[in-house]
Structure formats: C-alpha cells, structure tokens
Length: 288
Image 1 (cartoon, rainbow, N blue to C red):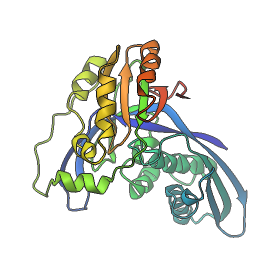
Image 2 (image 1 turned 180 degrees about the horizontal axis):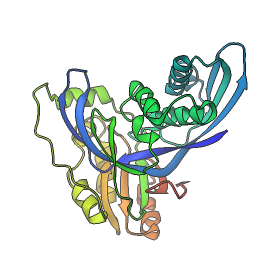
Image 3 (image 1 turned 90 degrees about the horizontal axis):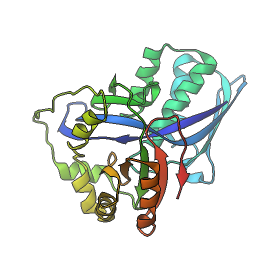
Image 4 (image 1 turned 30 degrees about the horizontal axis):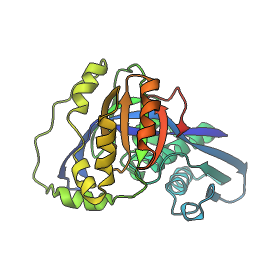
C-alpha cells in the first residue's frame, strides 16, 4: 500500500495562554500543500504483533522513537491486532521545520491501517490522533484548508480557494520550539482571542495572513537567517505574501504566478534549500 503524506503551512498562528493540560491555546488557518513524504505499508498475517518503521537513508529516524511507530502501535494495541506491519518512509518534507511532516506521517499511518483493518470509526480515529500530537488530527481530514483552535486538535473545514504557486525555503538550521514558547512567556491568564472569520476567497486569506505568526519574531532571534529569507522574498516581483510556517524555521511565499515563483528562487540559492510547490494537494513539487 502506497500513500502520500502531505505537508502544511500556517497562514497565521496566534499563540495564547498555557492551559491546565500543559498545552498553549492557539488559533490558525492551516493549508495542506503539494509537498509530500512517500509511505509504503506491508501488512501480513502473523501470530504475534510485529512492527518495523524504516526511514530511507536515516537510521536515527527509524524505529520506536518515530511518531509513525507510536501511531501504529497505538492503533493496533487498542484494537488488539496481531499482524506483521512494515512501514517505509521516503522523506521529502524538511525535518523539524514547521511543516508538520511527522504529524502528517502519523495521520497517514492511522488512515492506511484503518483502510486495511477497518477497526475504527472516523471519530474513534480522531481520538487516537489527538493522543499523538496537536497537528495530527488536521491531517485525518480530506479538506486542504481548515481553521484550527484549542490546542490545535479542533478543526473546522474552510471553503477551498484557487491554488497558488508556493516557495518553501528552509535555512537548514533547526530552532527549538520549547525555547520559542519560553520566550513568548504567555503564562496561564486567559488572553483575548481573535474573532473567527470564515474563508470564502483569497481576499479573506489576505486579511488572515496579515495577523501574522506569533512565533516568528522569537524564532528569528534564534535563527537570524529566517529574517534574511523573509526580506529577500518580500522584495520579489509577484510575491503575494511571505511568512514563517509553524514554529519554523521554514519560510513560505505565495506568488501570483508560477513564473514569478521560479524566477524568485534564483535570489535564494545561497540562503537555504528551496522547494517549489502549490497550495492544495492536487499538484506536484520540485526541489530547486
């Protein structure tokens, strides 16, 4: 069984108080994009449960520490499944980069296993996803664009908008999400939230993107290259908007045309790794 595991970007990211469960309250509009990891599943009958997760070319990411291993083990233990399961992953999504590649892999694993075993309803699968991480539930839904709030597990589908060309630029320097939260220093006192706004078109998203990413400034303090990338992208012809995704360090830029996006990539050759792709999951991606 072969599955594509798509990345996401955040059009905005508002971070609020730390809740009693240890998570921060947040609001974001999240968009799947056409960059994906490739996952292969081999499932065979067995008298006992056996699980292997292998990441192509990276032994450190393989094995029990991988969130895919945790997802498969959780799925099978709850349903008391005895099978031999092997998962192979080809990583195309930048690692630890604000694109939720690991969370997407975990959700894709849950969906693939449920396609085979049919052990859970969607709501039950959603409950498993919530145990694995804040972004995992988002990737269970078929919708490409969703409003997410709470601790990042409550999702509301939004109207699909016309796809746009996209550059993803990673400075190849990891930033610590824990240090960013520490620097934000939100505390536990409830904060005023922004008003929810349904998306009907790109004009609505223009307004949402201007709300910004609360983690961006703190991430730049840890990795100044993020600001360099933002500055270069904002000066490019046809760039509609640029912002850091999630907790970073990947920066995305939306363009009015594919030609503008590809022409802009040349200005970024010396600041990081670049991928050209599209919003939504119906297109392709290219490393530049």
